[in-house]
Image (cartoon, rainbow, N blue to C red; front, side, top):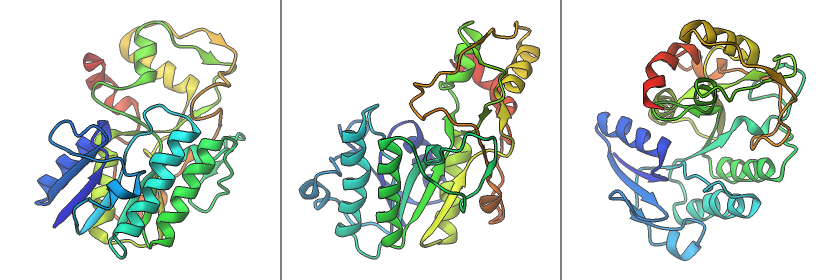
Length: 268
């Protein structure tokens, strides 16, 4: 089996590794063409039209920290061009749980309203719609962390973390390797026209998270401060449920963030 992997960054490289371990041939694609990948801007229909055929396509390219214009180019135009170039080929698009804008601490499932308050979130939903119309799968990823990457833990260890207000806001995360394994799992099962949340099994309030880290690393609890309303993913307060994904037989190796924190700390 052959995978056309659009995006060869932090998550993409982990996906490539998992699929290769499963016996797949992986054709990675990136904007720059570095690291042995095919150079292609999938937002350009001419360039996308030159991509090689494959049995499955996964779109996990990053927006390069760009705003709405980048989201339109990479996600919306990219998914449309891939769907047009490869009709009938299973397509999986990695979206984000930022499409859920709930602020009341409620549990959100794939059936919960997804009404993002930012243009970037609305563009992700449009890319999801294109993917689903092409009989594809959209996976909504929580905040990705793993070896060499964890904003929460890095700020905590550097003494720069702040507990927003009373710390009630829930943190929804997923370990990079658990996300890659979930994507492989869903691909093997052959789902079509489906949406799945990819998140760990234990959303933690910000205060609980920092209290756990304080005990684990023998560090003081961060001070309290105002909420950060300028967060890239928006200020939300929700508990993302992974029950639908777990019902398919997937289980995270790291059910909660503290399960991986000690191993990640030396890599930051």
